[in-house]
Image 1 (cartoon, helix red, strand yellow):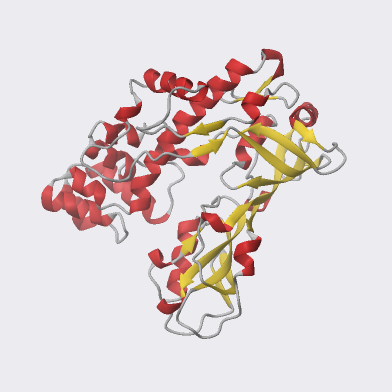
Image 2 (tube, rainbow, N blue to C red):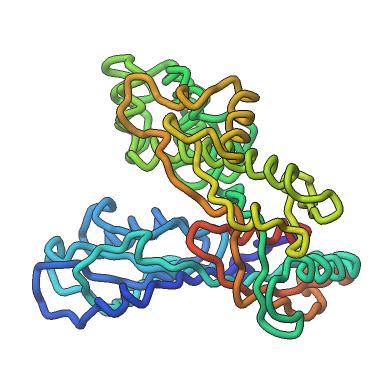
Length: 405
C-alpha cells in the first residue's frame, strides 16, 4: 500500500470556520485588520509558501500568519493572512508563483490562527494494492465504522495518534532533540537540528546540513560559508561566543519549539497505545502493518477509551487518573519524571499542558471502488481512493494506518 506516489494523490483542503469567514469583508482601503488569502500549493511546505507570499507582497516571512502546517508532498489549500497596515500597495486579487498561488478572500479583524480552522478535508489515492489489500481495507473500515454504511458516507472512529510528520529528525533514527535539551546538551541539540543531513532535505537546508556535518566544531569556517537563511544566526553566535545555549536561542522560534512538540507527541503516542492495550480486548484490536500502532474496532471500544481526555506530558500534569498513571510509566521507561520536562536555562520552549482527544472521528468517509493502478509497472496492482473530513490536529496518515497501511 503506497500513498503520495505523486502530489495529486494526496489532496488536503482546509475547512475554515463559518465564524471566521463571516467576519471577512471586501477591502475598504483601510490600514486596520488583516488581509486574508487562500493559498494553494503543491510539493511546497507551508513555511515555504508563506515566505513566497511575503516576498510577493514585499513583507517579511514572519508577517504571514497561518493556522497549521500542511503536507509538502501533496496538493493542499489553506488560508493565510497579512497585516493590512504592512502593505505598501493594494493587495492583488491573485498571485501566481512556482507550484503555489494565492487568491484574495477579503479582510477581517483577526489574523489567521488555528482557532480559525475547523479541520481538513482529504482525498487520497492509495496505490500498489493487491486484491487481499483491497478486501482488508474494506474489512477494517467496517470494523471502525460507527455510523453509516459502506455504500455511502460514514463516520469512522480511530485512536488519535500523532502522525510521523510530527517527529522531525527522530524519523531518520538520529535521536530526540528534546532529550538533549532536557539534559542541557545544547551543542548536541544544535547538531541534530541543523547539522544532521536527511534524505529528504532540499534547497538551502540540504546545503547547510551537509556543510555542518562535514565541518561541525569549526565555527569560524561555518560562519563564513553558511548560506543566507534564518539558521545562520545560530552559527554566527557559535563563531562569536562558543555558547551553544545562546546559539540554540538564536534559531527561529518555530525550530526551537518543534523538537519539544515532537517529543511530547512521542510520549503521548506511547501512552495511548498502552491505554488501548489495557482496556480493549485482544480480539477487538487492530494493528498497523508495522505493529507500531494499535487501534480498536468500534464495537469493541469501551466508553472509557472513546471519552478519555488525554493530556500532553508536562511538569505539572495530573497523575491520579488512568491516563496519568500510564504516562508515568511511559516517562519512567525513558528514565524521566514529569518534573524533568524542563529545559535548563531557558524559559521557552516549554513542555506546555494541553489535552488531546484519545479517539478522533473521520466524518464523511467514502471508500472508492478499486481500479487498475496506472502507475504500476507490472500492471497487476490496484488503486483505491478514500475521502473524509478530520478535526483539526488529527492525521490522515494515522487513519490510513488503521486501514492497514
